[in-house]
Image (cartoon, rainbow over all chains, first blue to last red):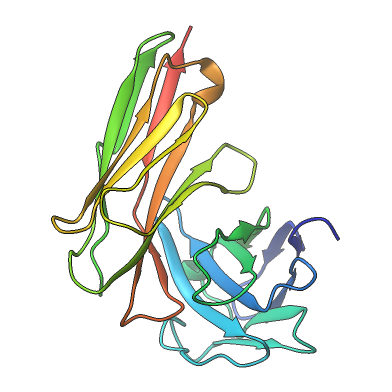
Amino acid sequence: GAGVSQSPSNKVTEKGKDVELRCDPISGHTALYWYRQSLGQGLEFLIYFQGNSAPDKSGLPSDRFSAERTGGSVSTLTIQRTQQEDSAVYLCASSELVGYTGELFFGEGSRLTVL
Amino acid sequence: ILNVEQSPQSLHVQEGDSTNFTCSFPSSNFYALHWYRWETAKSPEALFVMTLNGDEKKKGRISATLNTKEGYSYLYIKGSQPEDSATYLCAFWATDSWGKLQFGAGTQVVVTP
């Protein structure tokens, strides 16, 4: 596609349920990033992928969070046993390469609300 | 944890006025500094990527400067227009935090006609 695509755009779930958020980056972009913005907060780095590899997972808030990327393309961020503090806008971005001093291209985000 | 700070947190500008705001970041291990504009209900869009001390970039009425030795960047908007209303984010990339583009909390700009 022309841009970074994220789905769902909105997700309301009950506390304790699992959710999956999907990101489809720009074709040919090898670097993919996940961020989240909680209410009143700045963009919080979660994880990045170079190809299918995630060299540093230390930004994930807890072991309930996991992410994978397959085929060097689509990425899924999974949150298990969701908690109310997980409510946020989850943003995905891609770029040509990690370390390439070019811009990140962002999707429109997935807004997660945990009741 | 890297400290990327933006000030002010918000500002109101009259249409036609010029304004500027600041991003400060660690002066060591500098790799790149990004500026993004984030309009309500849209995705963040890149304005500038700056890599060299003394860099000055310009896009239309918006420009930015970079001082890596003292760890700050200024973003300037000349002759503000209502369509400039957005949150402006800076992001810092350190050589020892590969892949982690760390964002500041942003400066929210409201331009009133």
